[in-house]
Length: 227
Image 1: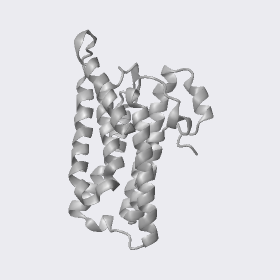
Image 2: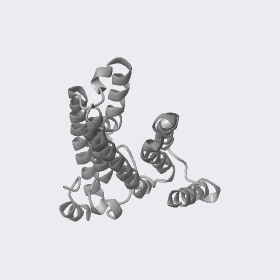
Image 3: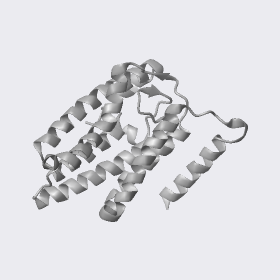
């Protein structure tokens, strides 16, 4: 019920924002981000008959991210270096590309676990991480971005627990996936992903510190990933 009411209200607000005298022209990046996450949501829906309710958190995350591109505020500052963009898009796409390549060409890279304990722990961790990431994206929706950009300083909700709660959710999600597919190749891919994310967090914090003087106090009070 909460999801339906909240999602409906946001769509109504989005429609009002995009019509009448208050119309704000959306940038190409807004529409590209919306299209990208909409395609991911569509792909997830196609898998729903097989995996059922297990994919609901992932679907919610992708829908929230897609909608965020249409309701987010204009960027006040941004980091446009090649390295910043590479780590931003690499952190977003690397694991997805790895899984796509492995599934189609190297299935031994994602061999499923034979451990009942690993299977149960993996599903629980994956679900918990996905739900937390979806909640964090929804809380950030007016300041959401892929590239390092500063729109507004968000410190409430999940951001009271971690400075990067979305990435904390991804960390839990991917850790759960590794328990489901515990191969050395997948572990290596996740290590590369984590290094990309570490640089991505540094880039984001650099632009936030330059834009919001109060960010440094927040940074000293809250850990990057909650630990």
